[in-house]
Structures are given as C-alpha cells and as structure tokens.
Amino acid sequence: MNSDHTIIDAFAIKDCALVAIATGKRAQNLKELYEYLQIIHPESIYYHFWGEMLRPRFVDPEYNNDFSSWAHHGLHDTRLAERLGVIDPTDFKDLESLRRELLDVIEERLDEFEHIPWSKKDRQFHFIRSQIVVFNTQQTIEAPEQLPKKFPGISTSSIFYHFVDARRRNEEGYNDFNAWLGGFGEKYSALCVRLSEIDPYFTSLVDLRKELSRIFIEYFGKGQV
Image 1 (cartoon, rainbow, N blue to C red):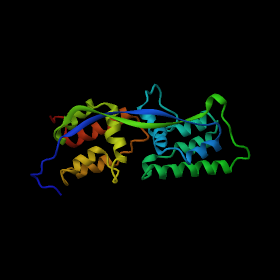
Image 2: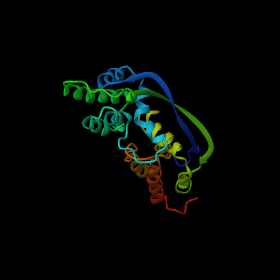
Image 3: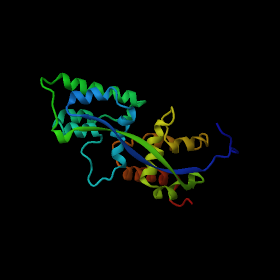
Image 4: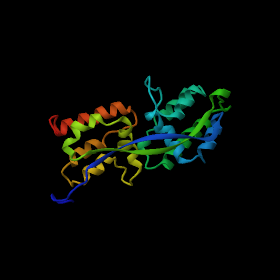
C-alpha cells in the first residue's frame, strides 16, 4: 500500500484506432469457418468480437460479434447465431480460451447437421486481423477528483483503449482507470469495485462513457475541478 506522501503520475489520456488487416482467408460454409478458427491469428478473433465497437453505428447491431452475425445473415442459422451471440469475451482469460469456446459451440452445431450449411458466394466470412494504433492526446487527468469534469470530454475511442483494450495488457485484467486508482492504495477501492463490475461488451462506447461518467459523478460529485 502506498503512503499518503507517494506521488502518483497524472493519468495520460490516449486515443486509438483499430486497423483492419485482410488475412486472405474466407469461409464459405460452417466447416470451413471451424477449420480456419483453429489456425487463425488470435488478433483476428479479437477484431471480430471487439471491432464492432469502433465502427460507425447507425442502428443497434442485432448481434454483437461478427461470427454470430454471419451465422444469421450468411448461413441463415438463427440457432447458431444465438449461441454465438451470447458469448461474452470478458468471461475468458485470454483469446485462446475464447477460441476454444467458439470451436466448441460450432462443433456442437456441426454435429447436429446432416448437411453442412453454405453461404452464398457473395456472403463469405472474411477473416480480418486487427492491429491497434495508439495516439497521445497530450491531455491528462491530474487527480481522481477531476474525473467527473473531464471524463465526458474523452473520445469513445479513448474509452475503448483505456477501458476495453487495457484488459488484455495486464495479467489481472484491469482497465487503466482501476490500475491508476489502485496506485493511491485503498483510498478509491470502493470506486474500483464499481468500475470492475461493468461489463463493456453488451453495450456501445457512447453508453459506456455515460455509465462511467455517472459513476464518477456519484462518487465525487458534480462540482469537482
């Protein structure tokens, strides 16, 4: 635990973009999807689960990940789409564990078929790999008490970087706000618990920012500077 005299650095706000990189791998039917999922780069699995959050949204997506969306729109298999759609990537410690869950669900569905379902030629599943590019915004939050005032002005892609992508950058699975607040010892432990209870997957980044802002205002009050 840090003493009261420990100096904690300001929180450096960063922004990001998730760059899509074509892999050249495409699945026409469910068996091909299953086979490619066994060997595809883990960053492709990451992109197809989380990439939707950073794409422009004009309507709420029917399914949260690209696999479930393709099962519905490409294969017209609503049952498989629903099974894939309820998979929450935050429930898995790493991408390999998530890969195994995907394979188990698809394998179970394949066993239920006499004939493997195919998509139309123009509805193939294209495996995309992601690479995150990080930008320094030159903005900082000097003290936790400034969170209620400064947080609403943070971009949604910054929310993604600090609250979503951060979870895979440390073994504990902390978001960056929890990691920073933890540097003050037990002082903000109650706040950290509330932040840890938020599941960022089944929501939008705009709604996630609103939820986090609400929590910071409730904890610190609106009048913080």
